[in-house]
Length: 220
Image (cartoon, rainbow, N blue to C red):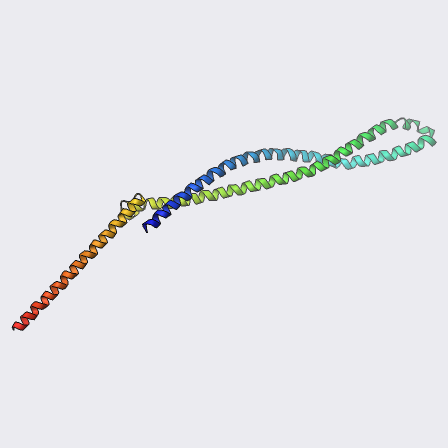
């Protein structure tokens, strides 16, 4: 019984120490994760703003493509008309400028296509950040559970340490409890021996009484 109590108290203390170490480690990890999450949150906001700008630019990409096709169509018509229509000279003079605008629009279209690919990559990065945030929230919940378990173990250990107050005995340590148990066992042995002595004495008196009664009866 005493050995079991000692083992249980020692196990409780070891569990509390282990939980304390775990909490300290997780607290440090949580601080690092919190800073990382804040940094990623700022990046996420920047990414969101860039996504909005890129989506706006992407929406204009279709208009640019239509404009390019229209310019190409006009350019083809003008190139045909310059040979057969002399009254189109004023329009033909604009062809170099239109070629320049066409090149610019084509370059812008290439940029917008690359931007669209970047938007996809940014969305994937945003999803990864969201999963990291979810994992951190789960770790916070686990830390709360560890704290609750630590509190329960502390209360259980305190109950053992306060055993002397609840029983009225002078028990402050496991050694005190062992000493009290030994004293109780010794008192129990003494009482049993005393009872045995009394029982033997009573039996001896009963036998003596019976002998006297027998002698009295034989005398009469």
